[in-house]
Image (cartoon, rainbow, N blue to C red; front, top):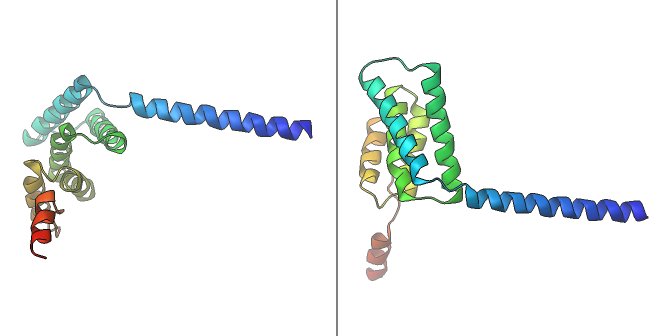
Length: 150
């Protein structure tokens, strides 16, 4: 009986420790301005290579994948309008490399999460050029207009 109670208590403490680690990780996972700047520079370098018709190396591919993972992780923790240009530029790189599903995902992230930025119409145009049917998310202004019509 003592072993069972000790096992339950140990499990409880283990779960508490894991919970604390997860909440601490969420707080510390906010990207710094330096990290966002570095990602922006990396995306710009990759864009220059593509427009210059240079091939991307395996390291370049790893850089792009790493940036996309960091962006997606940051979106889960705390979306920030600073991420919109990075998603848009990543979408451009994927589109230029004929990686349509990845490009669509990046552009849709801009539309769904940053619809009030200047990049949302550009993302919509890029999606439409790729043959994707797009519906712009409703903004607060649209909601007010529909309320007035009632």
